[in-house]
Amino acid sequence: MTALPAASPKKLGLVIDLDICVGCHACAVNCKEWNSGGHAAPLTDFDAYGAKPDGVWFNRIHTFEAGEGAAGRTVHFPKSCMHCETPACVTVCPTGASFKRAADGIVLVDEDKCIGCKLCSWACPYGAREFDSQEGVMKKCTLCIDRIYNETLDERDRVPACVAACPVGARHFGDLGDEDSPVSQLVAERGGYGLMPELGYTPVNQYLPPRPSQARAGCTGATALPVDDVTPARGFLRWVDRLLSR
Amino acid sequence: MHPAYSVIFFTSASGGGYLLLALLALFGALGILPTDPVLGVVGFGVGFVAVTAGLLASTFHLGHPERAWRAFSQWRSSWLSREGVLSLATFVPAGLLAILWVFFGRTSMPLAILTILLALATVSATAMIYASLKPVQRWANGYVLPNYLLLGLASGATWLALITAIVLPAFYATIVLDWTAIIALGLAALGKVAYWRFIDRSRSASTPESATGLGAIGKVRLFAAPHTEENYLLKEMGYQVARKHALKLRLIALALGFTVPAILVFLAMLVSGWAAVALLALATIGNAIGTLTERWLFFAEARHTVTLYYGSEAA
Image (tube, rainbow over all chains, first blue to last red; front, side, top):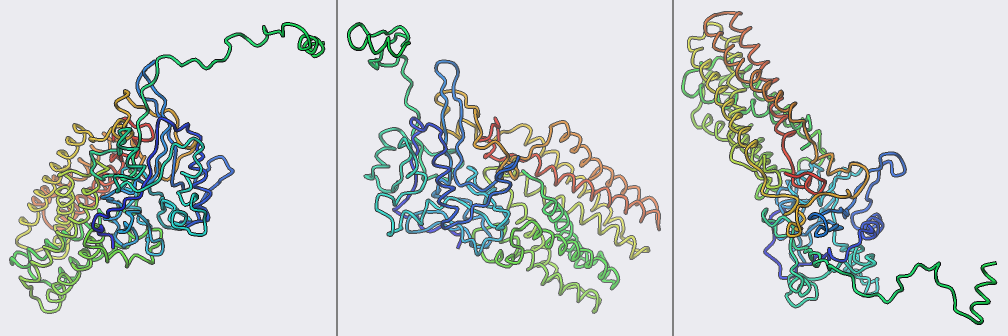
């Protein structure tokens, strides 16, 4: 059924810290790796090693510049399915292949019902859905349902692959419907926001804005002198230095 | 938006086809058109062929055409599904009407009304598929639905004038059909000009700033795209037509699609016999080329909010 379920109290989603993200693409790579063998597998690639590689990705990392000069910022910006509260990608689906789960709010595609009409990708303002022209069906982020509920994994690994991979802790996973959850508190504390609120899709995923930049860097304790000018004063180290400089 | 030829053909052909069926039902029920069997065969025949060819064409761009039957299931929420259901439902009263007309030489007011309502509803559902897509501001507006209906009416009325001129050369009320075509072509042109004025003067509420939420820092611009090569999103939603080409194509659509056909239909009223048929045939061909051009532009000029993430400054 592509009619939306009653709003669920549980809203699983991601919180992405734009202040921390370094744009390393590790989340996208681990997403691709996990999902190439996961629920929505395969994530087809075309001409992967050729001149014009193309393929299906659930998560893509853009880099933006905002503002000018010293006040300007370079912001790395990962973007994947927002698991919206009112996802038009679901309601436009003519076949019932697209659905939003009542239990946790995750938006999924039943690939056995999908006719590949692409209308859902038109209805998504964020570009979260990609057509797999080899499989003839639409693919999208599953929030790694095959990880987060997977009891064969260690409990700490039951997070989406993108969250597990992030080396700087810029990605958080949790229940945004629960005001007391760590992710909700993070959003409240840092002024997290959803994208394109004017369209009314009410995305569940939230972004934490970059913190204001600091005018001066703090003291790190390192010397400001060029290393070449540093010669050991005397004694044993001076003898070693002369020996090595020979 | 990427202009897929199957969808351009489908929406143009089925729009004209459904409105032709509606006009046949209307003029038949009002007693303006005689329930002549040959007119019935050709008129309903052309209507059903246009509609069926359009519907079949619409399945060509599917990833799994063999599952197309599933698209009839979600009419509660999906305009695409509603379009599918309504398009098939129209065949029932229109088919019964055609049988009455051809084999029994009569018409039926209830069947005619049902045919007209379902035909209008089908074309409206096609329009609503686009008009309900909020990420595409150039589609999600009040101009799209009347445009689809008027363009279908213009094609359907021109086809009916031509068919009647061929099948019933001695028909007494040609003037009604010709003026219907001229008025429909004029209204379609006005509707299209109004639509173009609207899309030229308005902008999407979405911007790179609202798409990223970084507007508080300053103006937002793309520094590095996610991948070096084009992806599905750019191929499907990033299609752009050069503005100077768009202007030329608009003129072609307006002239060939509506203005010249309207003049040709008017001239056809002044002559008779095969001269009139030739003029109406030219009008029909011009209208077809113009309508296809217009439909191509409807896609090519539409911009999707996802392009804001790939360097577009407006959607």
